[in-house]
Image 1 (tube, rainbow, N blue to C red):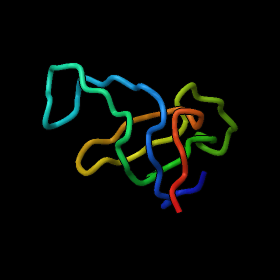
Image 2 (image 1 turned 180 degrees about the horizontal axis):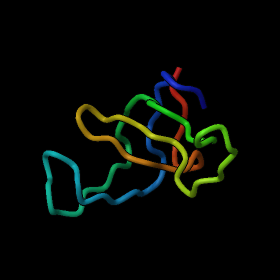
Image 3 (image 1 turned 60 degrees about the vertical axis):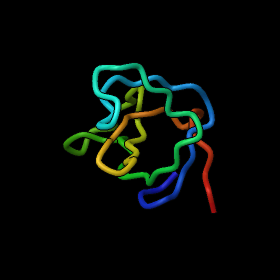
Length: 73
């Protein structure tokens, strides 16, 4: 995945910080968003984060794994 790709959440991901459901469990399955960043280095050093893909769903930004997402054309 690259920065700017449109993606859809394809598996159950529960978050508690969604702006419209603050403090409540909210499942992101089926939500569409845009890849903001793919984390793979920090200050020039290679890293391997657990949740490397940062996706924006409007005002909400979420760190996800690539296997939780499906790319939309």
